[in-house]
Length: 74
Image (cartoon, rainbow, N blue to C red; front, side):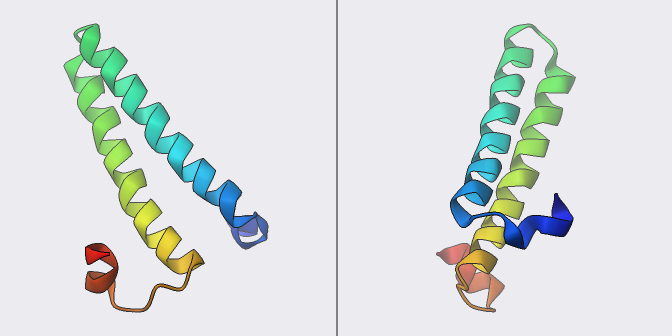
C-alpha cells in the first residue's frame, strides 16, 4: 500500500486515515467499557499516531507549505 500511495485517489487516502482513527477510537472505547484499561490506552495512543500522520499526509496531499509549525496551527 505504501508503494502505491500516490496512485490512490486523494479522497480514498483521506477515508483510509479517517477510518483508522474511527476504528482505533471505537476499539479503545470498547476496551475501556470492558475494563481493559491497558488495551484502551494502547488504542488511544495508536489513534493519536494516526491523527498526527494524517495531519502530515493531508498537508502533503494539498501542498500546504513546508513550514511544519504553520501546518499544525492550520
